[in-house]
Length: 108
Image 1 (cartoon, one colour):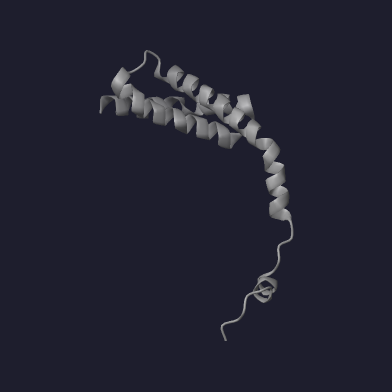
Image 2 (cartoon, rainbow, N blue to C red):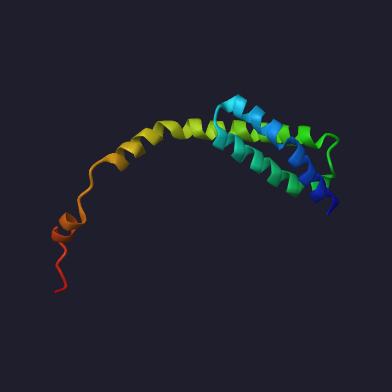
């Protein structure tokens, strides 16, 4: 319970500073927020087992930064395929009327 309170206090005090640093590093608010949320989750899992780190804010910033790097690597791997997927999504699709008459008999 004490460690949960320590995480809450640390998050309240350090959230803005850590998030700003992550946004500055990657230029993407959503990725930065996701990385920081993952760091909070990891802290909830690890701090009860390993104890409170000497510098909880620094620990969160470091874990969030490492997670941000992982997310950026993931996105870099996915980026080439994303354009193909986007093209497929934007391609015209047959309307429901065309699909209905193309081999499907009406029940009436």
